[in-house]
Image 1 (cartoon, rainbow, N blue to C red):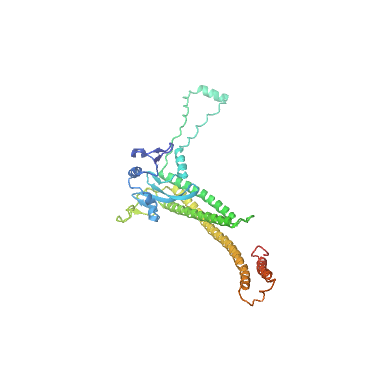
Image 2: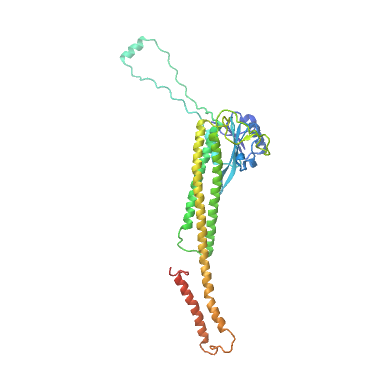
Length: 396
């Protein structure tokens, strides 16, 4: 899908280069090879592909080529019940902004609606007519003075779409994305709070061992999912921080210098400089740079929040593993008790089961009951001792 967003008008599909004339923002959503080639002709140079957007080095995420800034970052998106990060690319020139994405995002839809609804404010109202109360002196003066021509009534003002530059659209996109990430982090905080309550709450009815194992497995899955989400959010914030720093430090009106090293082994980076350049034609005006600096501060605060959330995830993981170890120790105690109380009766049965002729109790009429009582005592006394030690839920 290849869309053109123009102020005061709904988005329309671009089918030729003429359709993009005078449009400040063109959007490629999961583009086909034909749409990619058409966008490259409109931009005047090759555009990054999906493989280029997936590169992780800084020189691939932020670069300048022939007066255009090529920016990319992973962007978080909720798919079903999980969050995944997909790459998003921005190509900023003096004339237009080209966005390249392979998933629909609510932030892009919100900014597209703002652009479609954007119009100039109405002009100030006409000066009100003077008071209709006329004094006798004024009536005599008006009768002797020549008549003035009647004033024309002001025509009603119509709303005209205001011009929007590519930098304004990019700033609005980044600000909307930052707000969206803040909402996601709020949900992450509530998710971790609920997970913490589920881990540390006291269960009234102790479930069976099989239920405990399933509950512990579920907790580990939730902790792992939370840690993965924090990692994806951190990657998105890092990419956006690089973009905001780059845009807030670039100057306006001029030509961006080339790299000075035209020979390179990289397919996409011939003549690229990755540093913010003075007098760059793609750069933002002073007010927009200030908004980018504000967005960068917001991203820094969100990064601190993610670091705190990641630390909490590690703490919850340690706590979950600690509870699992406690449960395992309880099982081992039970196995120890069972194995210990089975040793003494086995020993007694083995002694009196020996086939020696001179066993003293061999002809004793109470020998059988004596051995059974001795076995019962060897079982009861250890059980009482373990109960008093608290291993069986007795005295603590």
